Length: 151
Image (cartoon, rainbow, N blue to C red):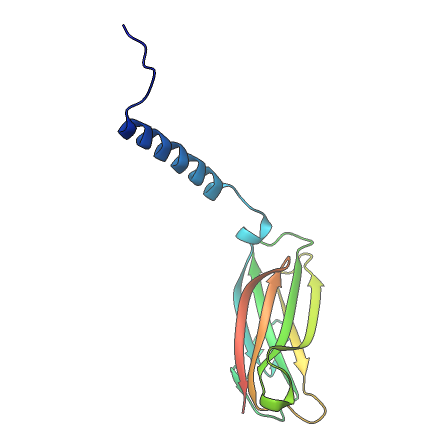
């Protein structure tokens, strides 16, 4: 029997494709960290919340004189010690602020709770009319964006 000193080009392509697929599958299946399994299962905006984290006056449109905008959130698959951060952004408010202006950033460390709230209060002269965002992060990975409008 004669030893094979080379592979036919087609067989070489199949072997290469199989190895590439196996490596790709292994990389795709490998867990990257807590942020992949952790997620926001619920997030809603309103003007206040109850003691048991139910949103009041749920909306994504608010008046210029709204005293406070509240977000109630629920998480799943989050380990104790996970950082949750909310970043309130004035996306487009005309001449009142530059585009994508960060209004406030608030962070908490989740212990045993699986729900909570974030809020931002009305600026002294009222909310500038325009488009806003609340970005929610788990361990510095953005997992949810809630757009809202001030009219």
